[in-house]
Length: 336
Image (cartoon, rainbow, N blue to C red):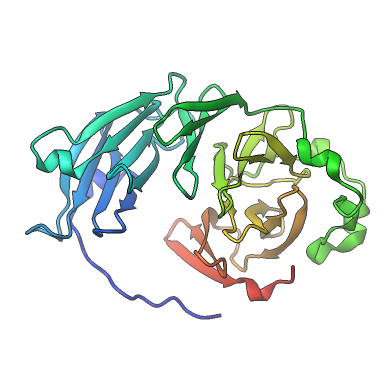
């Protein structure tokens, strides 16, 4: 396995006091290299910019502030921050339900950098833009899935929790059954073994928050959420129009992390078992497709997973009480 190599670094100054109790979000303008940063402190979300072409390129300049509040469930105050080239602004989403565009051009012209473009009254739990940035999907505080255009016009809205399994289930002709699929190290016998899925639950590390991840071509997206009727995580795959296609098979202690491989063949998540911690894979039809076990001890959590652009490497963000670690693994280690 190749080691990560540092190609470039740049030190920029922000208030340590501001960041000491907050998770910072960043977004990059790919054309200019400008970096937007957002963080939460003292009931306020602050947004700052490091302008590559200013006289103080190593410093962040504060652009705006928004009132916010701590969540009772321990989730993030800031849900998402992403630069939108067509809008020439960074899109900021907060748990309060506010969606805002932050513009460097307006700020430099002496105006307000911040523009609130919409608010979801019930709040926002998760948000993800399609790869082409034409569609944005939001999980609301009312447990609905809300699809909008890039101009934030509603396309569709429907309940997150459902007993339906999706349109794709009726098209199975045998090869799509669990018994005929690849099952990793446990083998086919384990797949055929009857399990009491009523005992399945979430991992102790689960943050209980929903996640959204798009396939690389933008045709489908997957939502991971805790189903209240099962008290365990479920993956649901939707097409771009918001129509449910497939629901994952039951998996005990499936965790919150989620990332769809850009090439489209695998959805990655994690599973915390009593004796090991696995990175697990699913197909688009919701069936398990192998796994590998992390070598770390039990004194860690998986915070996020992220594929690289060409789908050859999966990065795993691990956190312990002492530090954070980034692992990477190449898909040549697995058969699929």
